[in-house]
Image 1 (spheres, rainbow, N blue to C red):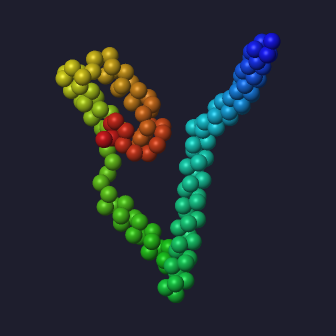
Image 2 (image 1 turned 180 degrees about the vertical axis):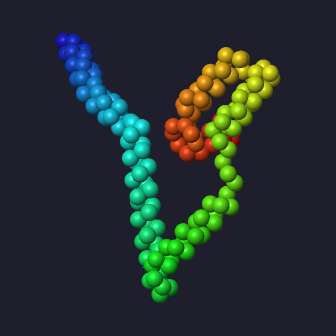
Image 3 (image 1 turned 135 degrees about the vertical axis):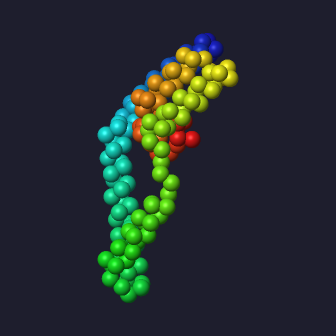
Length: 149
């Protein structure tokens, strides 16, 4: 009889564990779906990040001005001038059209080499044109995507 009791207890315990597991998993899954940022949330995050960066730069300029004993606007102007000089020294990024053309050339070579089928190459090119891949001109993180590398 104790053997029968223990099976009942085991089954009851398993049932309780299952209910508890579902009770914990369901809200977790729902929360994970809610936490996925939308494109508008991403735009807000970028704006917030830029605002915080501007605040840090202003604080830095003020602290530097105080340390050097010069007006903060002079320091800010000097930092902006240096920033513009560095930006001018950077090589210009290729346009979206140039990156897509380079990607198509690489895809054509991959088809020719037998690494991809033409259908696969067409699908990749279409995905790149529609902005599926992350990178400049597309959604997602900044950086070189397939066309920018």
